[in-house]
Structure formats: structure tokens, C-alpha cells
Image 1 (tube, rainbow, N blue to C red):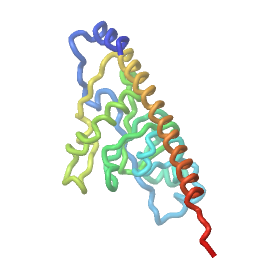
Image 2: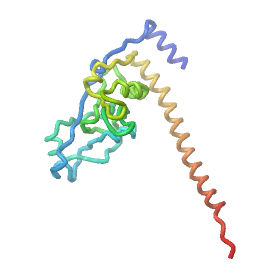
Image 3: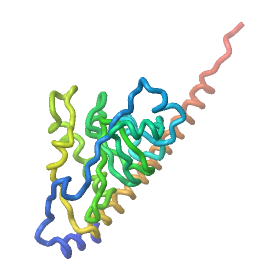
Image 4: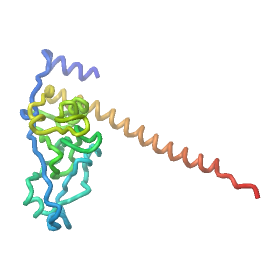
Length: 209
């Protein structure tokens, strides 16, 4: 953390400016081609992301693909790799969750893609919005279960924008923690499977005849 503290003291000694998302990102919403037209869906080749897939956090592929005809006849837009996608709506706890696109894709209307400008690191934006999950749900329209975010709500939403060097150091630190957490989860899963194996083996008795 000392490197980060030194960078902050050097590059932003008077504090960090907060900017509206519209000033640091291009906000793009998606759409859904007509489900009644098979020509829009069958043998599709264009990755099309639904709101539930935001829970994957990093999007390397999508469950569904649409055809060029489907894309041309809907208002969805292709967004580039390393965009940040936020769920505007969705069942349960989906609304307000964020993910990073690792491929070029388009989305349905329940997702908004944030395409970062040069002054903003996409992973920094992802980590920041991820930390504001509860706050984003609170500012949503409607009640806690049926509410929804919107581009209108997100456009003026302000985030701290330190110099890129500071952003990159924050990302480096959080990436390291994320990697450790993923390794611990893997270890836990392996231990759980090992436990289940020995539990079933140790408790497998033959009944007396």
C-alpha cells in the first residue's frame, strides 16, 4: 500500500476529482431481437448477453448468439472488449451487478455497457462500481424487489477519477487479492470433494446378514 500512498500524495495531494459517468464513459444500452422470428436467432454468430450472465463477472462467451439479421433489426449495439456491463434490471440480486466483457458483444435491454474514455481504466471502474452495489440498488427506481436502474440514473452518477497511474496501482492491488480469493475458493472446493469422498467411504457399511 505504501506505493499507492506515495502516488496519491504525489499526484493528487489536494484530493481526487469526482466526475459523472457520462464524462468518462460512453453509455450504451442493448435490445432484444424479436423472439418470434427464428431468422434472428438460429445459427447466430454474434454474441448477445442477457442480464443473468452479469453474475459471471468476466464474460468470455455468451449462452446465446443472434444472427446478423437479428442485429440489424434491433437497436442493440456491439460494444468492445473491456467494456464494463451493469445490470439495469434482473431477478433477485442481479440488478446493480457489474461484469467485464472479454469479447466483443451486444446485450439485451436490461444491461448498460460503459465504454471507458482514455482517462479511465476499465478495471478500476469495474472495481469501483462493484463496491457500490448496495448504493446502486438503493438509487434504483421503484421498490427493493421490482426497482430498476436506468441510463438516466447512471449518466450523472459520480465516481472518483484519480490519475491513471493511481488507478492502475489500485487495480494491481485488487487483482492480487482477487487471484488469492480464487485460489482459496479452488482449494475449498477440492477439500470439500475430498471430504465427501472420505465421508461416503468411511460411512459405507455392509448390513449384517
